[in-house]
Length: 306
Image (tube, rainbow, N blue to C red):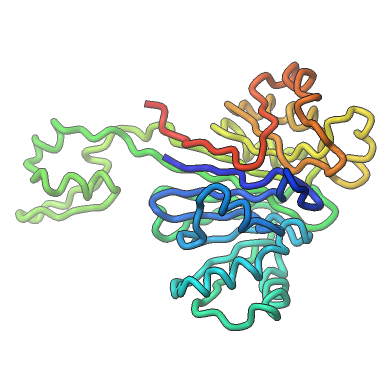
């Protein structure tokens, strides 16, 4: 199970009833935060979420509405006496940008580790989140920008009869279920594939914002259980503006969701000028029916199918 909370849905500037886009993803007691704009901490407080389990902060890009809340977040973590290292992931220049922001948060009781992304696509795993992997993929904005796809693998079903037939003590079954190899007292080495069936469908979540439609988004969002995508403009007459400033309309996002075969799409990163996203949903749903005009704090538990 993965807990997902879209903390805010605004782009460019926070509004009284619409905070800036940020995503909080929790699994196995640990958390990944994607983007940290102004007022991210307020959004977390509204949902009763803590910064304590955040082990990774990922950035899509370095425009202020996606990173300006970081110094305050770091100070809050430090004041909570955090000592565990914090991993930060983002495009090239990450360490320089973060250290510049840290002029107002210079002393922290924990180490910051940096992972700078280069190239079109990078996949990585996170310590303490078994079976959970992330892929950063380049999108098309007016500065270097990445989307993120998160996958939670699901192993095959445990074959009790096979385990019993090999005389494996029940107390060792859990190790095999976790993907670990064991050695029995008689010297036999038992690998997980000897007692596990074929891998079953896992969970996939894709998040992208500040971009034009790209093949990389469709590829990485393919078959996602949840696709969270920028919908900067709902007004059809703003299509030219979306192209000029490298953003997306509701309808472009819906066409990508349809092409990628996702289960559900949440729109986010609305323009401050977009007062009522719901006004444009009927036409959007004609393209992709399972589209939701997300509001701040929208949450879901993504679970395995069976």
